[in-house]
Length: 412
Image (cartoon, rainbow, N blue to C red; front, side):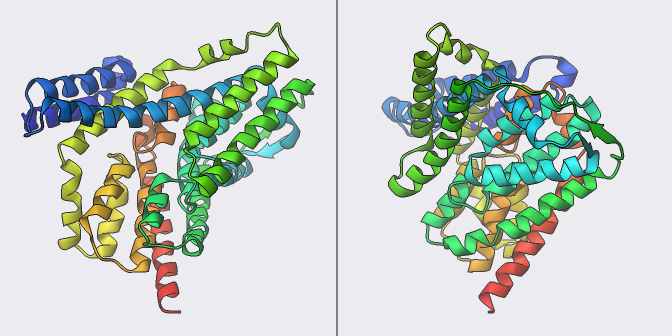
């Protein structure tokens, strides 16, 4: 039965890869296989767990799904309001020059994605960056290059802060690294982003012209924009200070947005913006997380710590980043921490970088990639895979830089 479940999970992930071939929406196929494996898990149990224990395990996985769903719903509703009101386009119009080279725009995009995701989560950063890109109305080939950079940059930006990536927080709470040590990762991570921006921008040689459209923002629009930024900042501060989950902060911020719009413009159906959410994005997330949850219950991830007994630690850490592009980095990191592997500070820093940035190597390897893939039609697994060489080079350069920096810290 274990083999059957593993095959079905594999088929679920393969259905994402061959979406362009079978022309079936990935949200439908992943939800089908994700729910099927859990039904079979109940019908033909593979462990000694009782029915109550199996329900408890399912509820544990559904809690993770629900938390991400609610957070994503709140963030997407915020962004839907800002986009519908033309706020994001107005900000782009004010910040962007009338003319900019495509190469310079590539560097600016990488910088914005990196910095924004350093204090916001990578899902929110991805949604805002995508809205920014769509307002530029680039052709498909150019848009793909910018999307690849955004996915990599938002993952790299969050890897050095305990509030930017869950795996970084997990390693910190386990006492393996300190905050000052973690912040040093941002330098190699940013260097990797700039390397990728350089490689991706080489074929781009044109000048882009932007017409300055003056959009007058109402007092309410400005207030909601400020509320959005306060929600992001408040999420960061409240999570660090009191341990309040980000989903709770964003739901509170969303409720404040509803009330502000209601009092300022009673005729506007503010709840209608919830309908603007692409629910196939949420269904795709649900299917993927159910598949990953089944891998966790089958204890597949428990085998990866054995890799550290076979190959050198630095190579194992490098490979863990590549593994995180296929599997959720949170349960993977949890399995490594639970295994009790012994490593020095330099090695823990490289692992932090690897599991945080390595998910960018495949479009399904990180929440940022999944969000972008579900919102942008041209972004498919196959098209993203064409840039795997560029991504691997940037990832490897950042890894080497973190390794060197860790060596300097331990030998200083």
